[in-house]
Image 1: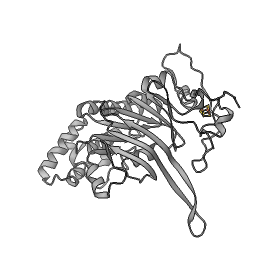
Image 2: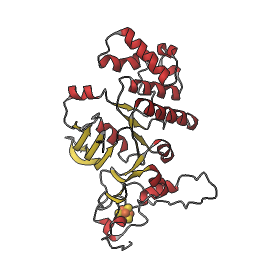
Image 3: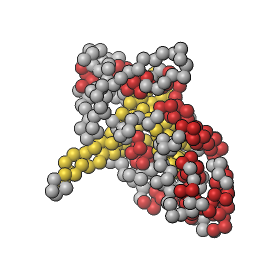
Image 4: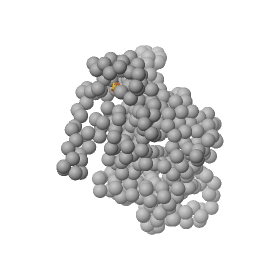
Length: 330
Ligand code: SF4
């Protein structure tokens, strides 16, 4: 079996909370708390969860745009967790990111030519004529026109700006792209155009995506497998169809129950979760979801469930799928 292109093992990212007059550390926010997964070459792995669940932090930590607190990240079998800045810069040719807000991520003072040409220059394309040609080629690849190169970001619509962001990410023929909520800021009609473009580019350029989003229907559209995060932890991970047809984790079941069904004859009961998401600076003991879980048991308050394969390629962190646990409902 081919080795995964990306392996994330026991990744943690904690942020210090500082307080008092001396600005000492008074606590920490466990934004990402011990997650492991692998991504196959050519795959689109969706990562979904509510705002603040740690999915974007995970994406940035994979690229080392923020430094992980602990854990290991391997890209094409190479441990990149402790690579120095210079080696990491070279590697970013192969590992790119597309951000949520294309406007904020594009320099308003630069022309599109400069925005897309910059990564080409950084990675060694010194010849201005070659860069110009490559920028025009990339614009056409993402469905824009060569003449757009001389314009500025504010002269484009949201969808066009995201196409520019994609062109910039593609400039150096990357292998892996972290897509951090790439369509969340766009109108629904534009979202599907961008998703279709991203799928087409994946096939054309043999790309691998980690696709981060809070919207389950967006993730369903594009992903091969989907991981669900809650409070910094991965609670379920499986093939897209298995997740949407047979969700196992009570949190995934609640998230899916909120999606309107396209078929009016299929009636899915909405599961309303009680309470708010607890603070990642003070997460609950045991299962992080136990304070809101409609199926919580006594054991869930004290023992954290392991993230295990409950059935063929279907991983879940829940005591309901551990045979030895007594079902003593709270
Ligand atoms: Fe709910 Fe317990 Fe499963 Fe957590 S371990 S999701 S609290 S049943």
